[in-house]
Length: 472
Image (cartoon, rainbow, N blue to C red; front, side, top):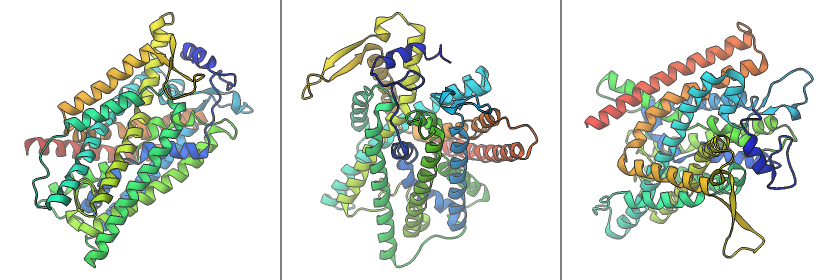
């Protein structure tokens, strides 16, 4: 592992006098920065689509499904947090154990190269697809702001829905090019704090609008069984899609170790991570339940796909504008939260492959106007070229395939079980020395098997939904 990170460690070691036990710059993260990173990764604009999911499952199935996946997220993160340092042996000093900086590092250490390649393929495909989906979603939110202003000024029957999202995607891509020059994950605490505040803000607005609409209606809409369908098969497909939406509204396991790698080693990183995980999952579940409940109560079986961009509300238009602006700001940070993992992998891979290349390893001091002369940005040409090309490719694919978020549902269903359940369970068993057929081993394998069945069910339903949309 030391060889894998050798070149990168030398670059970081030269950055400052205070170093951690691995030679990297001293980590400064704490419980609250951990919480901010998790909230940024876990709460996306998908929270506002959960009313539709609850509408498909009904008043009983919807809450049960969300609580179940909250538990899956908590348990998955708990298992994975133990895999940051390895190996474990009796009497070993936890502060001197090898660090696993990324998810792939942990898989390589505990499970070997073959499953590392599988993990990397699924992980980076999912991260890349998420970046494309964020580009599409941001464009939708920006367009929703323009529509809200149009409906307010010209009336609710005005033709305000015309026009594409291409300009908004290009603007989002330009912003991401700038943000991608952030050197690494350790420099992103401020961005995560802003994004976390934004996620709570627009979730609260969605909750408040749903509550206000429910009060205005004077009744709670919806039913125990959810939206009725013409055939049992159609109902099954809708339930599968709804479960998929809820399951993938909770993902952050694939960036958990990157978050844990920002934390101070006193108290132990795993202890801080577990506390942050509990707080974040509880806060997330509260917002998910509240927003989805009031959205379903307000609109019943007619719950829109997104409370704020589906225009279940027209007024107050300024509040809808503000909420969508908060979504955009959150996705600006969320895009970086997921993409920085790919950037870090690329930096390390290029450094290991071309250790003597100035293009890859040399940094140039660039003075930034308006800041003290003693401060300068360290510009690395390899980083600039790779990250610019990466953002350009995600923006280009979003422009070519604006329906990619439906395809991403299939992609998310594929990676849910292997990345969020199977690999964390297997790594934990290796790291803790859990022997086969013991009580703990049987419980973990049963948990993995159930999640595999659920993930497969959601995958089939997502594929059916994509096919139906394409044919429709």
